[in-house]
Image 1 (cartoon, rainbow, N blue to C red):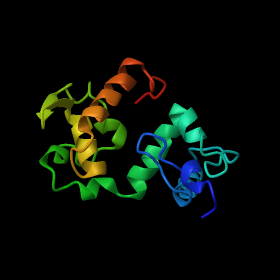
Image 2: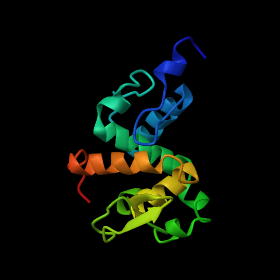
Image 3: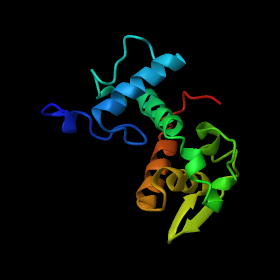
Length: 147
């Protein structure tokens, strides 16, 4: 590890991609999928994951797929309703009925709860995650992503 790597490769993107090796692996994965042009390298330019909503989302897709997040979440009943669905299908609140769930005194959507349980293994930070989800939706940050 070189001096500055900790800061340079801090958590960025929707699922907080961290560590130099993960930035490298994310870039390789996205290149192999054909989702990232060959001149883009997150290891060489880690700030791109923060500067672009597209790259922030793609880094989350990499993390979700690389870590095989869904199989690890089977112990949570709230996640089982999304079995066999892709991340973009899970987060589509409108398609999922805009159902609000109260968990540990936090009103959230079932999609945010399911993703929180899957990625974090519990509800730690659920309130903030719910606020960020609301902000992202209200500001149409990912409006260019059509399903």
